Length: 249
Image (cartoon, rainbow, N blue to C red):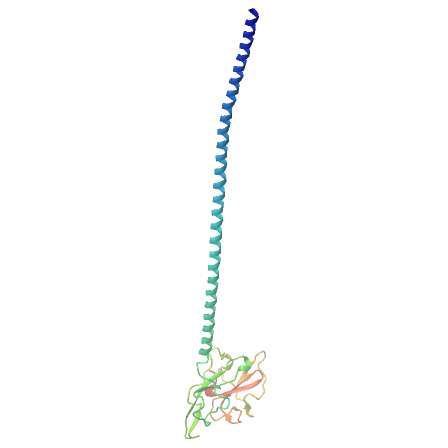
C-alpha cells in the first residue's frame, strides 16, 4: 500500500511540472505580437520621407530656367534702336553741306562779264572775284553772274558787274589787306596778277601791299593784259591783285 502511494505522488509532481512549462510557452506568444506592431510603424515613416523631399526639388529647377532666358532676349532689342539714331545724325550733316554753297552753282571757268550766253546756260551762277589769297590759306570771295538781254552782245550776255557784290566769306582774315596807312604805289612796270613774283615781309605769307584807288593810275593788269586800277598784295611770293571795288576792306 505504501509503495502505491509513492508512485501516485511522483506522477502528480510530473504533471505539475508540465503545467508550469505550458504557462511559459503562452507568455512567449504575447511578446511576438508586440514585436509585429513595432515593425509596421517603422515602414509607414520611411514611405512618407521619400515622397515629400523629391517633389519639392523638381519644382525649384523649373522656375530658374524660365526667367533667365526671357531677360536676355529683351536686351538685344534695345541695341538695334541705338543704330537707327546714328543714321539720323548722318542725314543732318549732309544738309549742312548744301547750306554752305547757298544753293547757287559755280559758273564755268569760261564765263566772263559781257560774254555771250544762251538760254541753256545755268543762270545765275557764282564766279570767283576779289584777291586770290588761297596761297595764304584763305577762302575765295565770289560774286553772282546772270545771263540777261544785252544790246552790247545781243541777244543775251553775262552780267557779272551788276548782278551782285563780291562777297568774302566770314572766315576770311582781312588784317593783311588794310589800307591804313595808305600803301605805296605799285611799280611802273605793271604787275600781272597771279604771275609777277615778289618778296614777302619777313616771316609772313601775306604782304607787303601796293596800289591806289586813283582812277588815273593803273596798278596792275589782269590775265588778258588789260590795265586795272586797284591794289596788289604779295601772297606767298606772287602778287595777287583786285580792283578797288573788290578789295577786302
